[in-house]
Image 1 (tube, one colour):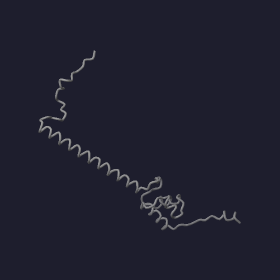
Image 2 (cartoon, one colour):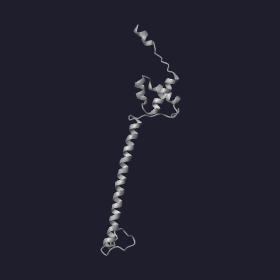
Image 3 (cartoon, one colour):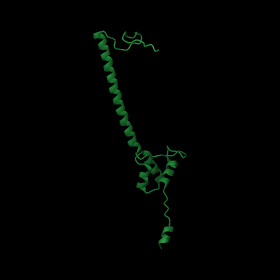
Image 4 (spheres, helix red, strand yellow):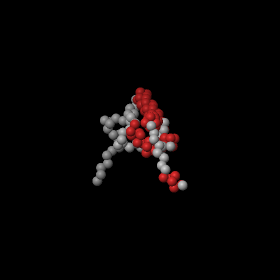
Length: 132
Protein backbone atom coordinates (compact mmCIF):
# COMPACT_ATOMS: atom_id res chain seq x y z
CA UNK A 1 0.00 0.00 0.00
CA UNK A 2 2.81 2.41 0.82
CA UNK A 3 4.50 1.83 -2.51
CA UNK A 4 1.32 3.04 -4.25
CA UNK A 5 1.35 6.28 -2.27
CA UNK A 6 4.83 7.07 -3.54
CA UNK A 7 3.66 6.71 -7.13
CA UNK A 8 0.95 9.31 -6.66
CA UNK A 9 2.45 12.71 -7.44
CA UNK A 10 0.89 15.91 -6.29
CA UNK A 11 0.62 18.47 -9.05
CA UNK A 12 -0.60 21.87 -8.13
CA UNK A 13 -1.82 24.32 -10.70
CA UNK A 14 -1.51 28.01 -9.96
CA UNK A 15 -3.61 30.70 -11.59
CA UNK A 16 -2.04 33.50 -13.58
CA UNK A 17 -3.22 36.01 -10.98
CA UNK A 18 -1.53 34.08 -8.19
CA UNK A 19 1.73 33.87 -10.15
CA UNK A 20 1.62 37.61 -10.85
CA UNK A 21 0.95 38.27 -7.16
CA UNK A 22 4.08 36.31 -6.21
CA UNK A 23 6.11 38.29 -8.76
CA UNK A 24 4.82 41.64 -7.46
CA UNK A 25 5.74 40.60 -3.91
CA UNK A 26 9.25 39.87 -5.14
CA UNK A 27 9.52 43.12 -7.11
CA UNK A 28 8.31 45.20 -4.18
CA UNK A 29 11.46 44.17 -2.29
CA UNK A 30 9.56 42.92 0.74
CA UNK A 31 10.47 39.29 0.13
CA UNK A 32 13.35 37.46 -1.48
CA UNK A 33 12.86 34.28 -3.52
CA UNK A 34 13.88 31.98 -0.62
CA UNK A 35 11.45 33.82 1.67
CA UNK A 36 8.64 33.43 -0.87
CA UNK A 37 9.53 29.76 -1.22
CA UNK A 38 9.12 29.19 2.52
CA UNK A 39 6.10 31.44 2.85
CA UNK A 40 4.03 29.90 0.05
CA UNK A 41 5.56 26.42 -0.11
CA UNK A 42 6.51 26.79 -3.77
CA UNK A 43 9.73 25.57 -5.37
CA UNK A 44 12.16 28.41 -6.08
CA UNK A 45 12.58 27.17 -9.65
CA UNK A 46 8.91 27.90 -10.29
CA UNK A 47 9.20 31.35 -8.72
CA UNK A 48 12.19 32.23 -10.91
CA UNK A 49 10.32 31.05 -14.00
CA UNK A 50 7.36 33.25 -13.06
CA UNK A 51 9.67 36.21 -12.50
CA UNK A 52 11.16 35.75 -15.95
CA UNK A 53 7.70 35.41 -17.44
CA UNK A 54 5.69 38.10 -15.64
CA UNK A 55 8.22 40.60 -14.32
CA UNK A 56 8.45 44.10 -15.73
CA UNK A 57 12.12 44.38 -14.81
CA UNK A 58 13.71 40.98 -15.31
CA UNK A 59 14.11 39.36 -18.68
CA UNK A 60 14.88 35.77 -19.57
CA UNK A 61 18.54 35.33 -20.35
CA UNK A 62 19.58 37.48 -17.40
CA UNK A 63 20.33 35.70 -14.17
CA UNK A 64 18.83 36.99 -10.94
CA UNK A 65 21.27 36.81 -8.07
CA UNK A 66 20.29 37.34 -4.49
CA UNK A 67 22.71 37.74 -1.66
CA UNK A 68 22.15 36.74 1.92
CA UNK A 69 21.44 40.32 2.89
CA UNK A 70 18.37 41.84 1.39
CA UNK A 71 18.78 44.78 -0.95
CA UNK A 72 17.09 47.14 1.49
CA UNK A 73 19.59 46.46 4.26
CA UNK A 74 22.41 46.80 1.75
CA UNK A 75 21.08 50.19 0.65
CA UNK A 76 20.81 51.31 4.28
CA UNK A 77 24.41 50.27 4.91
CA UNK A 78 25.59 52.18 1.84
CA UNK A 79 23.61 55.28 2.86
CA UNK A 80 25.18 55.09 6.33
CA UNK A 81 28.65 54.84 4.76
CA UNK A 82 27.94 57.85 2.52
CA UNK A 83 26.84 59.86 5.55
CA UNK A 84 30.05 58.94 7.42
CA UNK A 85 32.20 59.93 4.43
CA UNK A 86 30.35 63.23 4.03
CA UNK A 87 31.00 64.00 7.70
CA UNK A 88 34.69 63.19 7.28
CA UNK A 89 34.94 65.43 4.21
CA UNK A 90 33.17 68.23 6.13
CA UNK A 91 35.64 67.95 9.02
CA UNK A 92 38.60 68.03 6.64
CA UNK A 93 37.19 71.10 4.87
CA UNK A 94 36.80 72.92 8.20
CA UNK A 95 40.41 72.04 9.08
CA UNK A 96 41.65 73.32 5.70
CA UNK A 97 39.78 76.60 6.12
CA UNK A 98 41.17 76.98 9.66
CA UNK A 99 44.76 76.42 8.51
CA UNK A 100 44.36 78.84 5.60
CA UNK A 101 43.05 81.47 8.01
CA UNK A 102 46.02 80.88 10.33
CA UNK A 103 48.43 81.34 7.40
CA UNK A 104 46.68 84.58 6.49
CA UNK A 105 46.85 85.87 10.09
CA UNK A 106 50.55 84.91 10.32
CA UNK A 107 51.27 86.85 7.15
CA UNK A 108 49.40 89.94 8.39
CA UNK A 109 50.74 90.05 11.96
CA UNK A 110 54.28 88.74 11.54
CA UNK A 111 54.85 89.66 7.89
CA UNK A 112 55.91 86.09 7.19
CA UNK A 113 54.85 84.28 4.07
CA UNK A 114 54.12 80.76 5.29
CA UNK A 115 53.04 79.44 1.94
CA UNK A 116 55.72 77.65 0.02
CA UNK A 117 57.08 79.82 -2.76
CA UNK A 118 58.92 77.94 -5.47
CA UNK A 119 60.61 81.01 -6.94
CA UNK A 120 62.76 81.81 -3.90
CA UNK A 121 66.35 80.59 -3.81
CA UNK A 122 67.28 77.99 -1.19
CA UNK A 123 68.52 79.29 2.16
CA UNK A 124 72.24 79.60 2.80
CA UNK A 125 72.18 76.60 5.12
CA UNK A 126 71.56 74.19 2.31
CA UNK A 127 74.05 73.88 -0.47
CA UNK A 128 74.55 71.38 -3.21
CA UNK A 129 76.98 68.61 -2.47
CA UNK A 130 79.32 67.68 -5.24
CA UNK A 131 79.66 63.97 -5.78
CA UNK A 132 83.17 62.82 -6.66
